[in-house]
Image 1 (cartoon, rainbow, N blue to C red):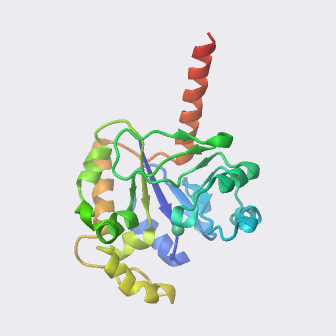
Image 2 (image 1 turned 90 degrees about the horizontal axis):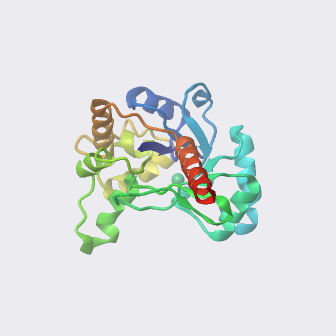
Image 3 (image 1 turned 120 degrees about the vertical axis):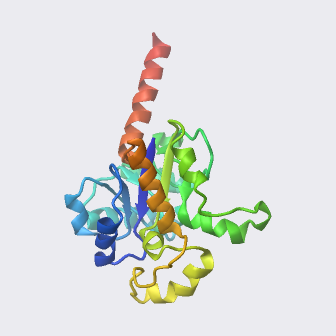
Length: 245
Ligand SMILES: [Zn+2]
């Protein structure tokens, strides 16, 4: 089961719209939003908040404000920089959230949804573009080679859960490595379009296109995380019913 998910950091309105036009993908995606993008309301994609939780006292009110700005009911959430803690999960439970997608189980096989305390489900991430790129710098002894086509092949091999977390800014910039991104970070921050700074070799955009092409060829469409959460809860309910019988 492949779930394509996207975090909207550093994308302006026009650039995100252009991303959806120029990088079509099969099935339904889940978009984690740090701000409203009204054009998404008329698409089939699932929309969830992507808050930047600051101090613990502010967690609940700030996430509530973002939900209101986005016009969303609480279902799923991914925090910026994947911040998670038990106290934050308690706050998310109190706000009415059903699932989070924050932990990284990079390149692992047989990933399944995990039940957290307070009944929340965690839908772990199999691939995240910026973690793939930063592993070169931050775990040198692993000898990790980023942007490997094997990431795509593995995801189509079996029915385990494969949550891909792409940043449209890295797809459209076609970020090849951390250095390239950092070299252009100030321009992006000051409002430059990632399309204008696009890298011409192999980058995140290349891998994203390869994944979409492989999914199309295999007749596989992305499922929204809400659907992953629903099948996890259904499966648990039927297991419990089986135990009682
Ligand atoms: Zn983020």
